[in-house]
Amino acid sequence: MPRAKLFAVAMFAAIGLAGCFGGGGGRHVIGESKAYEASLFRQNCAICHGPEGDGKILDDGMKVPSLREGDFKAKTENQIYDQIANGGNGMVGFRRQLSEREMRLLVDLVKRDLRGQ
Image 1: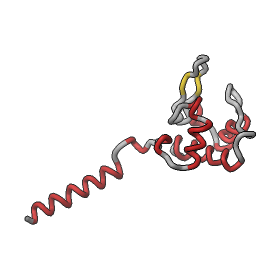
Image 2: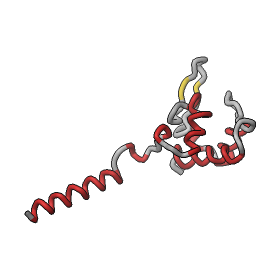
Image 3: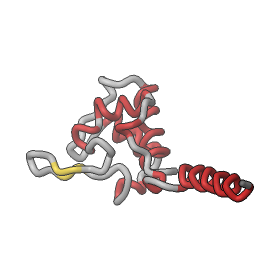
């Protein structure tokens, strides 16, 4: 009987460790997030940047960059804010649609959750 208990404890420990270290490689999933900023992203950004911020090609052939990797990943917090607020390079600005707080929340989402910084 002690062997069965030891086995059970080992199994629970393995399952617990798998939950901590396995699956997805730490990639934040916007579609599963209940956070307000994820909702803002889904409503305002996903149409062009894709549901998970990976970028995509629009119907008119324009390539929208990934917010997770590539050249965009080198942007500073201020540059990300400026892009969201004022737009540019084919992107519309959101200064008139979103509050200051909402734009800052999106900056944090991009920086923390999509770029892992």
